[in-house]
Image 1 (tube, rainbow, N blue to C red):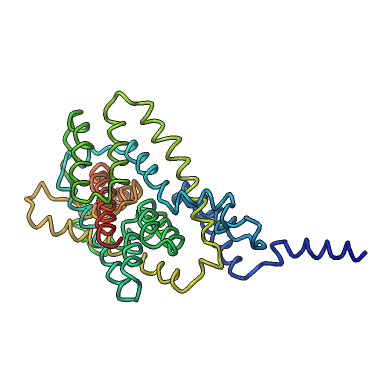
Image 2: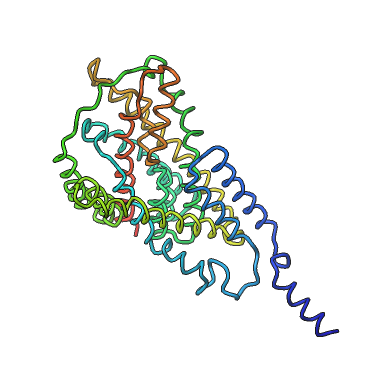
Length: 380
């Protein structure tokens, strides 16, 4: 009888109930919120469902030492998490993004690239704010990249500069990517007038195949000669784009834009979500990171819009740019471009801005990777 009781007590000792803390419940509820938003509102479901479910997995309490948790060396989750910790998954995602991206909108109107560059101000604003709040320069650089609204870049940078903060930075970056349709429109309306919101832009010119093929080659040479530290991301981005545009590597382009990016997205989402284990994640620093991330994202959106207004001071009538596409300078492709288009249609149902907004949007992808390379070059 005593033997049975001891066995039962030992069994109960190993259950999640015996190791439960209130923080686990908090994180599980947040995971459920992510899943709910993904399903009911369709906010970045490819990201929020893996992250939300990962949060649930990562916050089921367990008895330590059984090689179960993501932070326990040798566990399955820990092995999968190596791809995040060592920056393996983000370049694979950039390869897929490159293979899916059409740079025609940017090539047809190169000055739109400046909008993507202007939106990166949010990154450096958050960097300065983080320093002021007591974070180390390396931590501040990792936090600042949230302003680019680029989850893979945020993970890559935090794996290099601030591994201990990676969970909070990654979840923050992906959260704000998903909330683009909620956060950006009020800022866009606040900093534009009704007259500016109905500006019609000239249709983009036809881009030749030679331009499309040449662009990724020149792009990787120029950006990586300036910031070689951005090579893992920029090299894969432009390589993926060359696979797409060359016309002779369709199978490789389809693999990069299909199975590879899908597998990498699943693994990065699930393991990042699981890394939010309450005992390590729920700290004052994590809450502060979420606040700084929101600030950087708002600043990035604001500067994108204001920079277009500044550009318009020097452009003739008929060549002016609709400031509503300024928000798309952040790297949330293609959601921020869709937001530009949707807000524009609210004020003129025949003024479609999507084709124009994709220019600064894809420029923002390159810009955030360049900004990441700059930060790495003097902080690592």
